[in-house]
Length: 161
Image 1 (tube, rainbow, N blue to C red):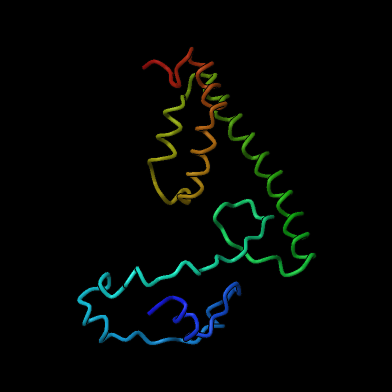
Image 2: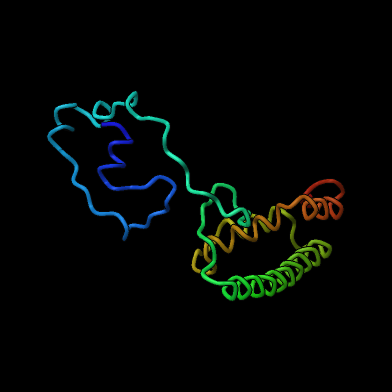
């Protein structure tokens, strides 16, 4: 069966975006799959035409490869954009505080880069979610933060033991 025939059978229009609610359920002919012996054998790749058109991307979305529909309204976009600015402002303040705490402890020769990594990667998992520790690790491993540790420890990321 060709892709074009399948699209016609399912009443799918090229270029239109569908959700699960729009499509009717279809039945797989299991006898044909059994006859072919395997799923790979059931697919005749030579019969698939290059007629598939990918859905159009919203060019305002910065995430490469992510296809998102447009906002439901201008007000929704304004609400999200305004909130995002505040979230980012708050996150940057917290990031600054975290880095300041790390650098203060490093200057006092209490911790080094490797102590922080060990502290974030090991220990009781109940103290933070994985995405939170991953966020802190990504903050710590920025080049300018690593360079600050090196400046405190004379070219290295850690103190001598």
